[in-house]
Length: 102
Length: 218
Image 1 (cartoon, each protein chain N blue to C red):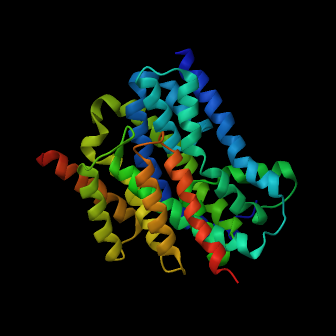
Image 2: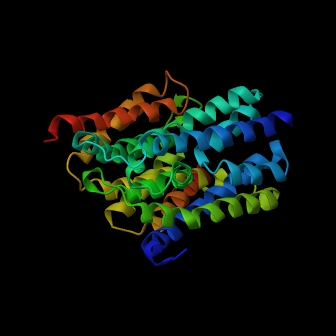
């Protein structure tokens, strides 16, 4: 139980420090144009990485399981320009359906 | 505080909040048998970072010690460093206030608030995070309380919510110049490093894909 509370305290402090580091280091300074061009591409790079690792990895191994079916359903919803919440629910339903059938 | 400038962000944040609520439920369900009823809710309130909470909890559940659990959670949160750098120029006030405003950086709000050409919308960030925080904590509480009745949250497909959520955010990004190339490269980096590095680091290193922006900048 002590390990749980130590983890919570430590992780809370480190997470807050990570989030504070950028604003404290840069202050209000404007970034050069090259840096802005890089920052504009951070979002697609990080989001694609999150999509793929959250879908195709488990305990540090690459896997294909029911989440892939859910992601495919979400992809269909995105192509149909569904709202974000609908996209998310469609993915959950698709994943649950594949698990129920398996 | 006047809410008017934050209204656009708040509106988007309600949808994000519903998704955070559902994922919060699954965190509560998963963490309760290990931590008891109080600790998961406290963790959501003070850490407020889904992937890191799931990751650290998985380490503890596998018998790992606190140091290893904190290290895993830290790696999963390392992406907030480049995200904070991107948000920094638009935040306001003295250093302490900037540091506090920087706590509002979570994936969905940050992705919404990054505008083209690398500029950043502070009001969108803060407004979109406001509904997500109470939703995340409340979802965790519901998950802790309802855990036994719900059974395994994976049977409900709740683990597919995060990637679908990020896919929806990514789709909104792809109309920007070179965004598709950065996404492909970032995804390839993350997937190829997943089998060789601890969880979290592949995502952090995927941020290197954004460096393709240097070459084409005028």
